Length: 218
Image: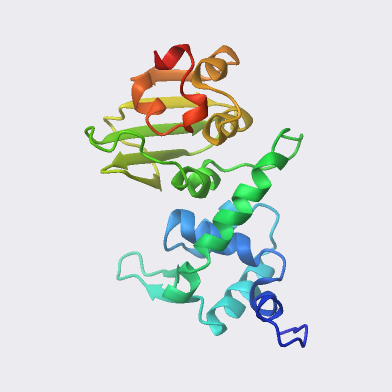
């Protein structure tokens, strides 16, 4: 392991997680849960297979991930975060919050996966926790779906679909991101091409407060 050789908590942390791709591997495991090697490759477009193997080995040696064998007939290996690895969620949430203003444009050629919205979505607050649970379906054009479950004041996510979504949102990644980060309200997002199916109040329930007072909220 390369080291900065400094007796400093930040330097020591970067000794472990400062290499390129390392925190993005952690992002995938936080968003998706235990993953196969092929799942990680799909969520990390651009990484070489041998480099992914190297990074996984480093993370395992550092005690941040562990392997979970699955029983037959699947018989594959899953990589999962340890408790120590899951402690990085707060670090990645802060990085995500800091980086959101950099997402003003979706440049040509930039990759996107809908589950990359999982951490910023988990930052949202259930503004009416006394109301019944709702399930929101997010679909970024050309990508897999992400389910947002809102219940008892908590917001959870998981990849995939639900048959009885309370509302679904479909649109380009930049527009979905702008809506969920509070840069545009629901009405404005719809005017710019966001498709809403279902109950708009279910969506407004988790949007930042300063974007939920537009016409759609009245």
